[in-house]
Length: 279
Ligand code: BV8
Ligand code: ZN
Image 1 (cartoon, rainbow, N blue to C red):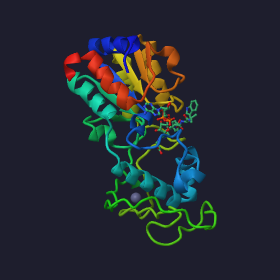
Image 2: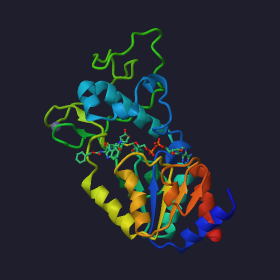
Image 3: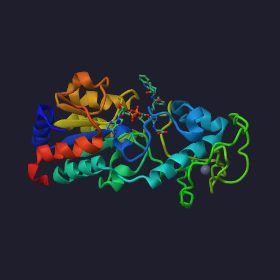
Image 4: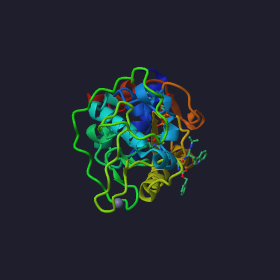
């Protein structure tokens, strides 16, 4: 990537002292982690993520929802941070007041070198009891099995049906562990649709966006609220917003620069444009 947009974005980054980097699923797409927009694959193609990622779905079929999150967690364990994640860490290393805010539940920002991103929607690596909220250690990370094959001509799995057999049943269901304290099922440490965001994370994000002198939004469709309001907070307070996304989004209108391309290519080019000596 080159051209006047990149040069302008590089100038804005080089001039920044308190940047915010706000990321969505597109940030991890090149690491092989499917975005929410990407069609679900294999067993999960039957399910709408926005349906599965709800308290109601977990109440109705805890094994299906736990199985889905375990499949996603194992997918992330197999994934590696991409050059985009490393470029975000390079920005944070060069500008110590950088705040990284993510909607993602994978741990690729941390593995890519960002110590403590603000997690608006939780993490795949922080399960807790669905009743008493007691944090629960992760099931010992078995070597990730490949996606279970389609059950040949198997019956359509019905929501609420008993998970058929063994830990990794062919229909992807996995009985969640029971809480050691109260015996209730353990749930993934993520924010489900209809659930409030963690207060501390949301206020840290709003505070950072209110005080930033540049907001870089990367790989988000900006459709899920209240997260989608974070770039608008910065724009409303006069901070320039730079967007990295291969396609237009509702944020285009508030952006000083739109960099149309994949994060794994655009972000390293942006760092080089801002700091040619960055090497
Ligand atoms: C709540 C964790 C109330 C779980 C997630 C206002 C208006 C309308 C609706 C609402 C509203 N306020 C609230 C709502 C309801 C709802 C909502 O926003 N619905 C939407 C769908 C309309 N919000 C909620 O329910 C929130 N809670 O409101 O609670 C409340 C309040 C107080 C007290 C009690 C209750 C909770 C929302 C959080 C849900 N959890 N994730 C999990 O992961 O399983 S959201 C989840 O989806 C992600 O975390 C992320 O936020 C979102 C997906 O969006 P993106 O990350 O942007 O990904 P997407 O796939 O959409 O797009 C990818 C983009 O990347 C694309 O643009 C693509 O072009 C681009 N791309 C692709 N490849 C690349 C790339 N970019 C760069 N490089 C590439 N290589
Ligand atoms: Zn409990």
